[in-house]
Amino acid sequence: MTEAVLAPRLDLDPALTPLVLDRLVFDRGFPLLAEGVTTFAYRGDVESVRLVHFGIGLAEDLHFERLGDSTWWLLALGLPEGTRLEYQLEICENGNHRVIEDPLNPYEARNPFGQNSVCRSHGYEVPPWALHDATAEPGSHRSLTIPSAALGRAVPVTVYLPASFTTEPEHRYPLMVLHDGTDYLHYAAASTVVDNLIHRGLVPELVVAFCDPHDRLVEYADDERHARFVAEELVPYLEAHVPLLDGRDARCLGGASFGAVAALSTAVRYPDTFGRLMLQSGSFAGAGVGCLERTDEIWAPVHDFVKRYLADPIAVADRVFMSCGVFEPLICENRALRPVLKDTGMQVVTGEARDGHTWGCWRDMLGVALPWLFADTFRPREVRLFERPQPSATLPSTNPGDPHG
Image 1 (cartoon, one colour):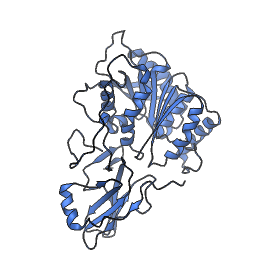
Image 2 (tube, rainbow, N blue to C red):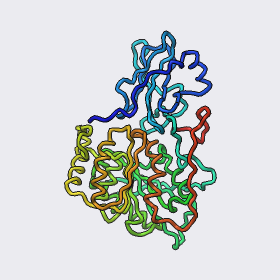
Image 3 (cartoon, rainbow, N blue to C red):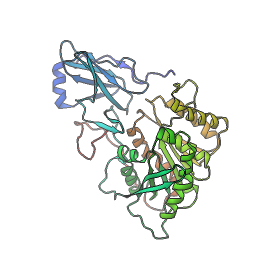
Image 4 (cartoon, rainbow, N blue to C red):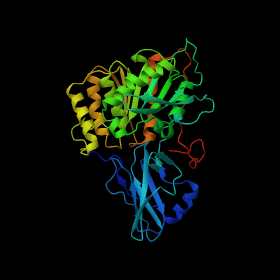
């Protein structure tokens, strides 16, 4: 796969001398952000420093340049305006290599495998729907364990109920089911996003079922058992215990990466169950020409599913929201699949973020996806849009209300 370099390596600013950098540690923090250029820095008496990022669109040589005989190392990249980039640093010291977070950068992002440093390039701000709003009344959570004959195990499900939730018969709620539910809660601030969107009147009061797999690379790779659990067991169980609106128009199914594959493949098997799909950075291996070849055995069921669907694409929902980061290899497959879905007659809206295959990327897109997916299910009430965030001109905040990137 060949892709244009979105963020080329640039020459260092000669004004960034070791003395200036010493002052900037306390004055501005790192990376240094300017329009069209982001400068990463490391200070230490080491042998080499390299930026580690898993994606595409960056220069091939991501090694830092040492400033003379000082202990300062710099790397300048032409990151596009509004880029959010998760990364680590590979340090070589005394012949030993280790990978660390950037010690000069206070922003970090957690994920199921650890955490990364976060570069917020010039023009990027965490969207307001992802930040805690003290005026938004929080919803509540119920932890369930739902027995599944299809999967042969009990499935943990966390159910989000809106703050004004009631069991009065005149109140019924749309349902959203999210794969990798605990990860959406922990790493994508999903409850905060939904709280804020409901508070602003941008989505209706809704119930969200956050589901967790046992082996996601198996269950989410077009597994008939998983699809049967979602459509024939989970949805009926929730309908029996929670006052939900009837019909596919009131149901949305979503997920990220392999979870997006599970969402689409479940909808293909049960096209009358969900009227709305949210597919974030879907791992749709085989969907495009010239994309990265994925030959590991875990991809085989996905390849087979995508091949079958491309051979006979059908409408399986009314609305589909697709998103992907431009710095992730899966952008190729997602761009290829979009016209296929549109040609079936489904309404498809797409969003591309200047980000990678990260929970931060998926968090940021939730506030775009959900209002469109549920746009026609509003109850009459005032809609209050978020104000456009303004880039900060001060040191990065380490306030507990905004600890992550």
